[in-house]
Image (tube, rainbow, N blue to C red):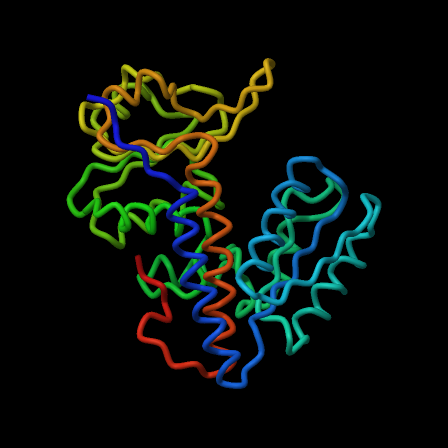
Length: 294
């Protein structure tokens, strides 16, 4: 039986529509729209497309978006000064610096300079620490989006064996914390993992976030497993593929995300959700779901 598709585009649109309604209500009450500042250093083509999509989504939702496109040779101190200025800007609720930044700039310094309350990427140590303590505030967007997708599809992860392939600070580690918060039994696999196939074969839910084209073979997938493919890899032919061999995996899984059109749109939607939640806190908007728990 072919797997059902977790349609990230459709779910993300539903999230964005809900955000637009809330922003319209805020403005009707005389409040300003949430503000997001997006900073990009250099002209990496993939980053440029991603940033363009973020700005379009903001415009669609009625969110105030400010663009800061800086040249490749921007000095690190100049970027940090811009971030400090945005930290103090009362019209800005979220600051996103598109990664990767050029090699002469420390990504760690950039992340730590962003005010915790405006860290809508959810990368600040304090925000990650709150997630670890099961008190999430601003959550890393990709794992947050995965949990939103699972909830939307009615997939109950409690008690599931969850295998995450990849241990990055952006996806793998916070993904583990998100799944733990929903009572899944979690394992992270990485470059030193022995017998990756054996781990994948026991996964009730698999999150692939290693960044290697079709590293995970479809015949490793357990019958009925839920497969979340975060990977986005371009083959020499130009075709975009994930970290999982989709054709075979989709014949074994119960649910699977496509690449593209799966997790990517959810990352942008949850960036906007984080920005909305940041604005609600700053403006004193009362909401029963301010934490955005999945």
